[in-house]
Length: 153
Picture 1 (cartoon, rainbow, N blue to C red):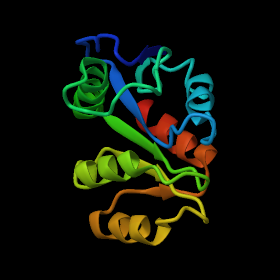
Picture 2 (tube, one colour):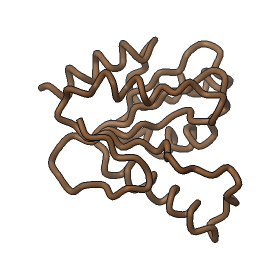
Picture 3 (cartoon, helix red, strand yellow):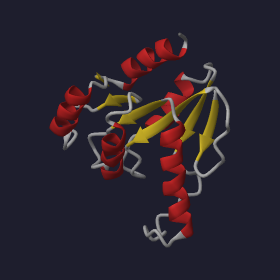
Picture 4 (tube, helix red, strand yellow):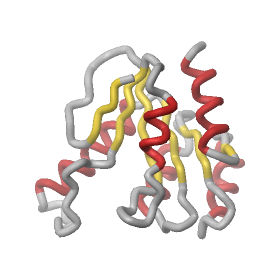
């Protein structure tokens, strides 16, 4: 497994690429991305992780801010280049960007979602999942078991 964090270059390779979408609110959201990387460390894949090591909360979230634009464009490019998108919605968060990503990729066939009870918009997520036929899982572990079967085919 190779892990590429934002804003590092995404390699042009045939390896399976998995984007880690989902709750990322610093200090609130569970750091679930580390768990995913650990469980997939022996697989021949590339993980695209938006959790940037040098993120600065003081950055203005404006299209005119070059660092913010770099992050958002990296995420959009990574989502487009990924083969699978893991979307984990932590019930302690609102995760508006994750919900945006869900909407953008609902029809892509790439989504694998964990949306636990208690997430503030679980009903919306459940209905979109049913309508567009992407799988939801009760836990990150069950999602990863399913994903490992997919990537080993």
